[in-house]
Image (cartoon, rainbow, N blue to C red):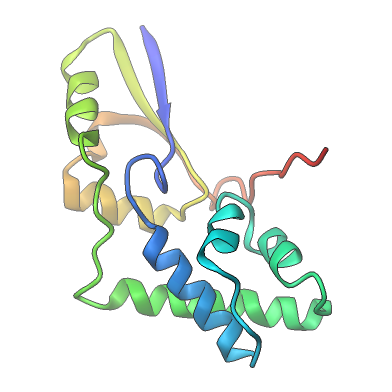
Length: 148
């Protein structure tokens, strides 16, 4: 038996638009110029605090904390919008279904996404019963950035 562990954002779902929009709203909410899309996507996978240490390095801790709060609010608002839909990457359903069909594999998730985000995805796609382990940002608050 082999365990296949997948990430969510950037592996199963294309969440880039929501991340970039929430980041833009966070910066604009503080009266700051927002980072470029490339700069934003370069910090995906870091904790929000680490991301803002990179993207708002010239700001003090109080501003970075406010950016984190505004990002979370903007992201929740974006998720509640009925028009919002994080699409699956092309072909990922076929890959997951192939693993489900093969008795030699178990599936797992390790992601920086919240448990509620994973639950929404699994409910939408019908995957919940097929993943044996689900490790989220709620279980492990952040991924450490490896710095040279």
